[in-house]
Amino acid sequence: MSTTTGPESPDALLGPADIRELAAALGVRPTKQKGQNFVIDANTVRRIVRTAEVRPEDVVVEVGPGLGSLTLALLEAADRVTAVEIDDVLAAALPATIAARMPQKKDRFALVHSDAMHVEELPGPAPTALVANLPYNVAVPVLLHMLERFPSIERTLVMVQAEVADRLAAKPGNKVYGVPSVKANWYAEVKRAGAIGRNVFWPAPNVDSGLVSLVRRTEPSRPPPPGRRSSRSSTRPSRSAARPCGPPSRAGPAPRPPPRRPS
Image (cartoon, rainbow, N blue to C red; front, side, top):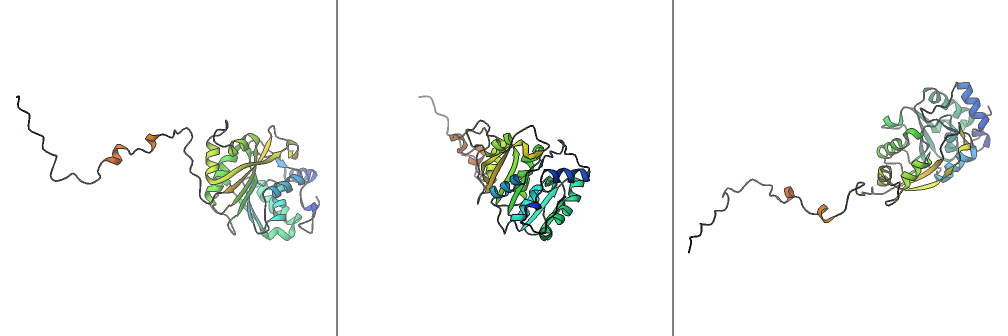
């Protein structure tokens, strides 16, 4: 496996042969259960970083770094990268990969060995961006958890299954608009940011992939829940709201009028 002495060298990034060599050395076979499809194309990971508009001052959090393809490309562009990895073998190997291929950046990298759904805090400065090739089987809950738990994340770019990308970015009236669309749009302005071919993965997935960009709103949007009708009754006070809240009057109920005599 080739190494590098400079973070700008193209040899720093992982190619198909590097990925397979690393996986063989670690005894790793990507599993569908964990949603593992490793990106093996350096041009693709650089494209993801460009599309994410990663800046030199950014602190990026990555979920599911795998063997480190995207991690290395992020380290080229950002100030710091924190990777969250659930797999024991991959989590143990990633710091060594960073140190071997990008030694000048090894102190700007941190690893959190955990299920992303259980992450409540991250080491170092607060993250400003989330960039990830999310495991497709848990993409939406992981994305929403990270946005909810880390309000410092201003910009997000995730690679997900194309169908999920369409749902996340859907607007009201679109046939695929639903709960993921509502929740994602509550946090951010969401849009599709491109498509990714199957041949840049190992193993090649059986589905197409898409990029989704999310830019956090200054104030969260508050759309009505799906299926709720807007009507006059929604603004009409309820009976309980119209009722006086204080104790009953000491004067008691008003007296009844006397019965009328027949004329």
